[in-house]
Image 1 (cartoon, rainbow, N blue to C red):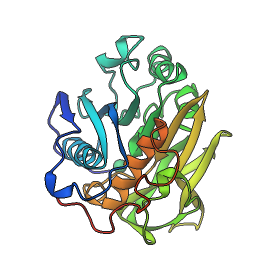
Image 2 (image 1 turned 30 degrees about the vertical axis):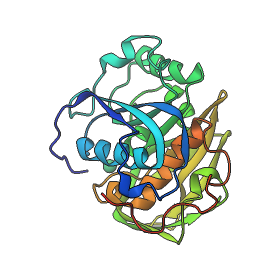
Image 3 (image 1 turned 90 degrees about the vertical axis):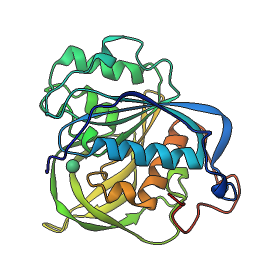
Image 4 (image 1 turned 60 degrees about the vertical axis):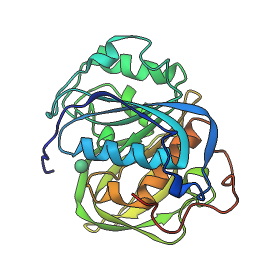
Length: 272
Ligand SMILES: [Zn+2]
């Protein structure tokens, strides 16, 4: 894993209604009251300021969302962030996107405080290194919440993806077969019983097939997950950003069926 230069950006708020007029012709996936989204990011190995900007901008074009971005915990693999000190940390939000990377954090009481926010019902989206966060922990609480257990990954490559649930609301944006940008294939040891694979990819090393996107039911809270999301190129890939945005809307109960317009997502990337 490469370490990229990170800067700290705590508490950035991006308002979803700041949509460019040039894109008004593109049907939005959700136009109801603003969806309050908490994006938690930070830790090792990835360009989180770039990733956060890409995801919040894309989602704001596609839906009426209001992001709060909490980027804390430094750039190492072991961090505990103040956000989770409050037992009610998740309550103000309709959905929480976890894109943090703290593999060596292993304090059970801390991890259970994080998970409790979702056990109480707050939906989630989990991206890439969230799956290796708390990897050192002996308790399984976080992994049960994620819906997958993964502890390692294959090399970076461009992975062809099989969409195995094309009618799932999170996956309806794909207009053509998807091959990722340069990214890591996470080796998934276990798909938890209430998780369903939505897309898979094959290891170039041993041919094993792994979920790369899934839908999960964590005690009634919806969780959408993807193990992709390592590189800047992935976060510049409209297919990836659209999938995560749709997954976020599905998790929060705002996109349960066909696209509102009936036309699906744009074939071309939205203007920057
Ligand atoms: Zn990575």
